[in-house]
Length: 241
Image 1 (cartoon, rainbow, N blue to C red):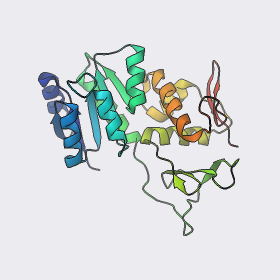
Image 2: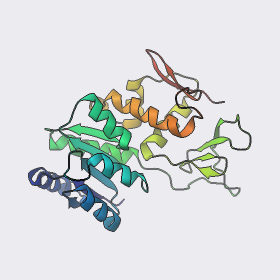
Image 3: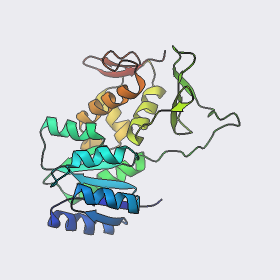
Image 4: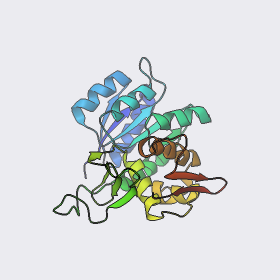
């Protein structure tokens, strides 16, 4: 597996500490001190994972993440001194997979990176049959016979009819876990354990924001969900239709 990593951080000291620590973990590290430079570096180096500070001069980290998400689903960790709920949620809704607040321990960053890279490995077309449909395909929503919503876990894709629905790797893994337990309620801690694979590092806001992002992609009306429903006080349940 390739280990190209891009650090987007305008504090020289923080950037240097992260680089030394992550190179010792085996990453091929490149750096950017602004979002604009980061996007140029992204186009050149095609990193496998990014660490992005939110508070940057000029273009913000939020905008940087949104721009990357236009063309890539690579894992992204936000690192920022902004730790209130609004900022955490905004960072995740921009497209980040995880969020770490400053000051932080370098070992926390490396542990989260290991977990993030491990859990976001997706099969690349393995198991697709000659008809082009994976043998483990699951119909999630057949209310529109012309454009059913079809999940193919082993092929690593979600289809609406013949069109592929773009999901980040975290969203894809979350949907697969919910589909495996279709009809059953999964609590936020259960989803953290099975999707994020981080144990005590987990933040329940990760679950809520990714559920909201997933709904915008699979529900006909995200404000009135029928596939991915909230069971108040308990968690979330996927109901196939």
